[in-house]
Image (cartoon, rainbow, N blue to C red; front, side, top):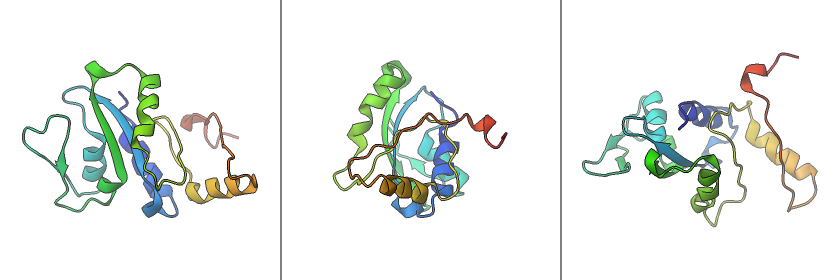
Length: 147
């Protein structure tokens, strides 16, 4: 359970140069009463979604046309089904689609730099290897810009 996930998703979309190209895959492990990530993102945009009655794990309608609603792919699990972050990361490939050219796996408490999407593609292109894998251990956001 990660309370900073909505902030991460907003940072990802807000700081992408081409946010329409970005799709998020979220394996959410919430307890009853926890705010759903899609609900939180759409609420912050002033475009709330509506939960279907008797929908169980979160089937929502998007009457206010929240743009990110269709860009966040979800696996919603009850906290009782959760088996930790390794299990959640292992389920992430279920959210990939055949037309996804790239995949990035991050923690739910990540803050993105402006135009991060273009910078990532530039770094990948600089490798001159279509099978290149970019990897890093990100700096804690509290330590950014201290140097």
